[in-house]
Length: 132
Image (cartoon, rainbow, N blue to C red; front, side, top):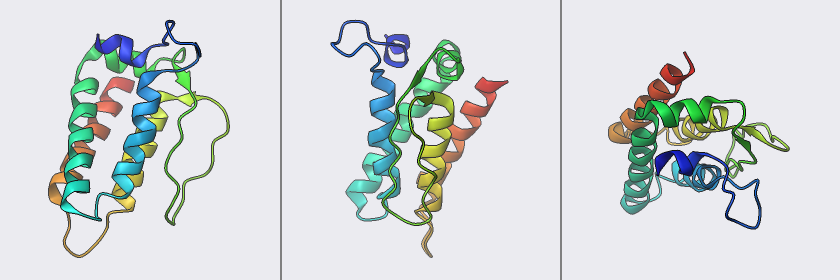
């Protein structure tokens, strides 16, 4: 079931839709706004835990890093410094790294949310291990 989450959905009307791309788009918004309230931080941490579970499976991680799984992923760009706008499809591994590093750079403050940072670093670590 996890593998179907990151592969092309053939049952929907739009065959280019990958559920994982929609999950990443939503998660990037959560990561950039995690500092607003304890509830937003809890949602961001839950999303990071889901991402960590997905990336810990080698089959799913291989599918995310594969060149055949590309999709349009909208990374949240509501705060400066903004990532460059990417038009068209992109690799899911690159989109994952962009989403979580955007969360790192937009949640810098005096009282650091250690739990959020720990989950982000675990996801980046799992994603880079899958690449090699």
